Image (cartoon, rainbow, N blue to C red; front, side, top):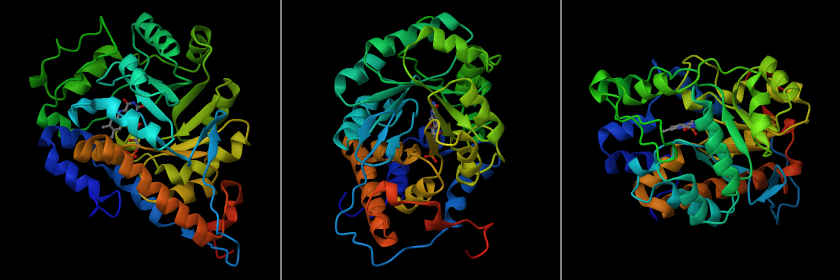
Length: 360
Ligand code: FNR
């Protein structure tokens, strides 16, 4: 592992380690995969305005999310089915998150149960949910997450229906194994019909979910609620009005609506209307410490990492995930030093230039 110098290199290792069906499932995006590519490409169009002759002999990357301290603004995005990547599944990812002093958002579609993940490490964890037509099933899992000590619920709102992921259709991707749910068996879905993931989603997810349902979620949990999947100022305002505790600007890693904008290009419009009332996080295409810095300069409190974490897990288990997070942290620390920002609070909008801006 010593020969790996950046997180992108884990993708090739994961490709070698995984059966094609699983690798394609992790890597893929929707339809033309335009948004998938743009998430990464859009970061490359943002340039720095570095400041010099600042004392950067000590760099402090630490920050707080919903009051919980983390070592750097780099968290783990919810991704499903970690046992397809590694036999230890989400417990390995959670241990790596704990070792890196960061927060893992555990997907409700995890292959280890939420309780197994909770008992594998005592770090701060958030729990991500989808809302099923069977509301009682969603309500039960939220209660279990509360009991198991998860500190927030992350409601993913960009999957009323599953995006068309053509690799999964071609490969007849197996339906997810639902360790967290009883009574929602996906085993009756015939994989030969196409993507088993899509078949499961169309049977189980509640496409009628709407803003009024935030009240319902509030009524069943005392935990803070974050909404994941916001891409416009209109919806950001609605989220604030609905009283949620945080927003994740996300297009689901380009897996849902293709030709949705790259997340980094819409971050500012969201931040602008939120006006600091609640934290705004971002995911999609973060592959470098410089990307983390750019997201913070444009107003994010932290970023979430999706695929690189899964690739690290597939390649090297817990150590691989730890290495991914550590490499991003090291690069981010260097970016802060070379930009003249010793603390997170020193990073400002003036430290970056977006493509639509004239020279400042
Ligand atoms: C995801 N994502 C996701 N999101 C979510 O809310 N619940 C989930 O169960 C999953 N599952 C999932 C599986 C896989 C294989 C991927 C790649 C993604 C979306 C994820 O949380 C995040 O939004 C993106 O992965 C971020 O983009 P990057 O970092 O992968 O570019």
